[in-house]
Image 1 (cartoon, rainbow, N blue to C red):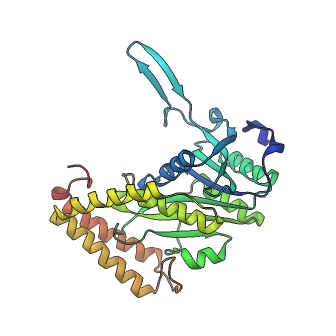
Image 2 (image 1 turned 30 degrees about the horizontal axis):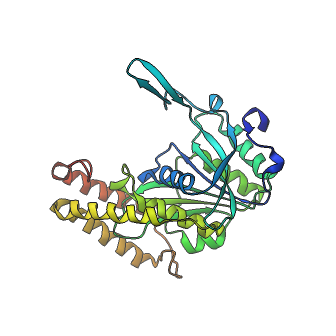
Image 3 (image 1 turned 30 degrees about the vertical axis):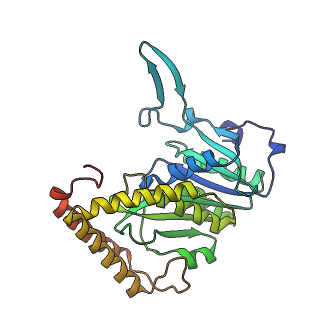
Amino acid sequence: MSLDALFTFNVDVADVPRGLPLVAGLTGFTDSGNTVSQFTDYILDTLDSRVVGEFDHDQLLDYRARRPVIYFDQDHLTGYEPPRLALYLVKDEIGRSFLFLTGYEPDFRWQAFSDAVLELARMLDVASMTWVHAIPMPTPHTRPIGATVSGSRDDLISAHSVWRPHTQVPATAMHLVEFRMHQRGDDVVGFVLLVPHYLGDTEFPAAAIKALEVISLATGLIFPTDRLREESREFLAKIDEQKNSNEELSKLVVALEERYDKYMEENAVRLSHLDDSGPLPSADEIAAELEKFLAMKRSTEDSAGDSLFDS
């Protein structure tokens, strides 16, 4: 399938600058802490942007699984918001341009979608591709958010990949794009952020900040984060208030802190602001730790509730 059959340019392709970094984040699968949704909205809300082109959602989206929104005003319909998977041209805080691919993760035609993204990257001579995703992990919110880093950037993988398992994982569409770009010899890196499990269903501003930070690490782009940092301070204050008023929740967080600190010490792993690195536990060891966490969580659910914010 040709690029034209799946993607439509909204501008003259000759007017799109060549040699720019490409940043990507798609929603749909997990998006723990609403990380991708938050940093996507933040980029488009705070930076100058314009749509370069859009993918054909009639070919890529399962409407019955993810129904679009239509507005009902008492006795008539007032508007319809179609889903969007689009490529934007954006300027960072100091005016440097980059390409931004964002929207829903395709339900169908992953091979054709990855073909189209690779063709766009070739046509626009992109300098690099950086994408971000987020999954839940048994880590405490009181410790830095870690990441699993993959792709062709050995410098970023060595310095910033906290968890490097040998395991099978459910793939996303961007995994396929990264895999094929890496095979082609392109400059590509993926960051999977490890978000505290118990905050996976919330909007966790610290995860969005982390996403912007890792994009900056990979591309040198500069993003304004003042608003997000203020939201993060308010959010963390609410978490601490909930934790301090509930003994079981407090014990849960303390237990996660102890396990996190022990893991980091035993494996000599350091986060991005430190230099040392060391061997990481196997997938079986991580799975065992996750099982311990879930067992503890089940034992405290009656008193703690399903969410930190149920009360």
